[in-house]
Image (tube, one colour):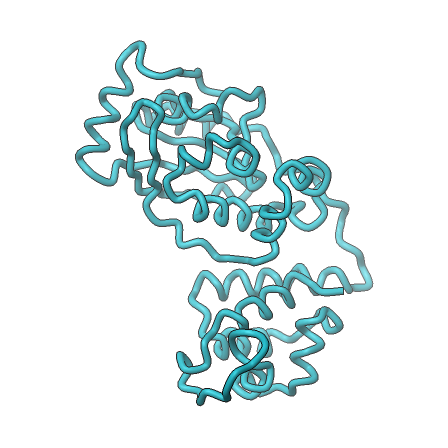
Length: 280
């Protein structure tokens, strides 16, 4: 049975073109990307050992092996962090002391974080957990997201909205990018591997496209967020994400990326513009 670590290494190997690493072209082959032979040689390990890692038969590679694979694949810093994280959780599946049963990420927002949101007004900011639940937000966030339908649910969830609401595909100009971001964040949730919510609720609703993205391990670049707002305005935002590590939550602040967006925001904040919701 494969592991997230093996899936990620195999996916990255398939995406690397040999010539980009200065390797000679070895003629046509059935699958794209880097051969196991070449990756193993670059990492200084045997092909048989690399095969065991990719297939999940060896779940505890040493730190030096993980780092060697990262170097061999020329991973960027974010991908290296993800590789080490996957090595940690894949190894945990095979230890003598089983990991604690998965717990649901906290949905309570600390009073000091709510006060931080208040101080950010009239800015656009929200607190969410790794499963995508929008736990609290500023009125400015509602002025942007309210008309999209995201906040209509009793428990708004951005991941569920992206994968199951057709409106999301027009609201997010770069829907594919946002879908990859939301799928990737599920790996970082405390219950990412065995969450009942993922397997029994989101998975059946979202379908195979969600499952494919989840297992592809695309580390998102998180560039400019581009929205096609229902009001007819185009909104572009830079995002700053602050990790609330002790809560397994994130505080995301949205900043206008250009003057046109800043002007449109002023218009959206006017009374009677869009559908507004109070802070969660």
